[in-house]
Length: 130
Image (cartoon, rainbow, N blue to C red; front, side, top):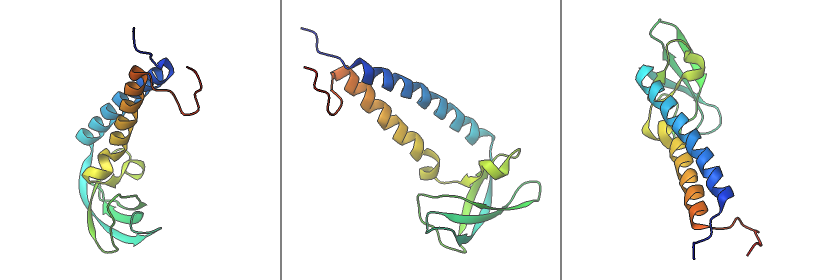
């Protein structure tokens, strides 16, 4: 007898896999085309994970932007900032391994859970089918 499959979970996992591939591709492109500079934490907006960072772009313009960071930072601390030259305002982020890859790692875990759950035939919570 063939084991039962949860096709809905498998389809959701497949869609998440496509999203994951798109996100990884976009992140790799961002990492290969972006600039890195030194920034300074000016102040904290809402705790140590939401600093306002000042940095000078390659064109000489100084930006002061709100960012977020998984690792806590303090005012006056130096941080590496990664940004794209054509749009530093919306692309700037703190350059740390956790800040760059954590979202993609969580998406990968969620994708794996749906695909494995769908292949093993695990029901959704509250599913009363037998």
